[in-house]
Image (tube, rainbow, N blue to C red):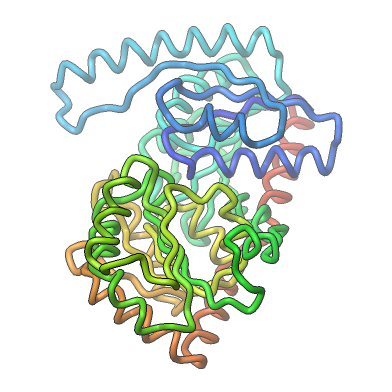
Length: 372
């Protein structure tokens, strides 16, 4: 099968596409792929690192401003129309069996173009609250796949909506935790807490970790791994050393965790934003979490994501307005020193997971291709 994937802006929109590609190759080893993203997002680098031998094409597009009369919105419409024409040219040349969109503005012109060309199309919505682009595309594509049970009704104009979970979950199940611990130089019985702020890092979480750093000595049996984000690394690591006097023995500070599936598989607790791919990863592995939803995302969708897991007992949600180093350490301490609470959270997290998500998406892809 020849598949074109499109998605961009953040890693959360790219990794599900790669997971679907991996499943396609597992089912049909002769599958071929093309990725269409933007030149300004993380997708080009992530795709290149994936090992899927996936060519990359760029289409330039921006999102709409909330102020409808904004001149920028006029420019966005022009870019959208140009993007549709650019995407049509790429698709006519590549001649895919299907086109899959996994989120981000770039999906708009690419999936719209594919639908207009009569190519089977599927979009995957990772969040509990659908984004503007996918709501727009749902009128035109063959299938909308959703990550959260009960959100099917949020696409009232779609021809077909199916619950599949997030394909990223399937990749996580295969992760080798022994390699994760080895990559960090830790013993196999290490009690590992991961703190990250998403693929780009998060200033608010970094500030909290600077304040928290002197406190990690209070949990000597727990090892902390903190990913600052590439652009924050130098300043944040220097301030941690200043705040703690020296880098604590049970704290590692890294700019980015490239082997996150393996490291996450080895962890006992994750502190992060509430991006959809992260939610799929931790529930697939049954890992307790402390989620700090970003308040700076469209329609506050990360809080909806976090609440869905917190309400089930698999996570603690800590709003950014309540975030501090002491508040975060207090929550970590309560979970890591209470085995019964940790076990309950792990069980509830796993109950929310959909481990065979990628297979379900590929089954739906095969269905719409056969139907065409």
